[in-house]
Image (tube, rainbow, N blue to C red; front, side, top):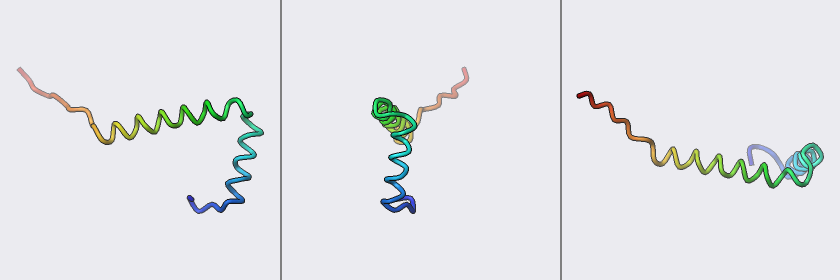
Length: 54
C-alpha cells in the first residue's frame, strides 16, 4: 500500500484522529469519496467540445 507497512498506517491513522478528532474523520472521508467519484466520472465521460462556427 504505497510502500507503507501496517505499523506506519496505524501511526498515520492515530495522528489523524488526534489532529482532526473522531467527528471530523467521517466528514473528510465522505468529501474525499465524492471528489474521487467526480474525478472518475470526468475521466470516463469527457465533455464534448462543440467548436462549430456559423
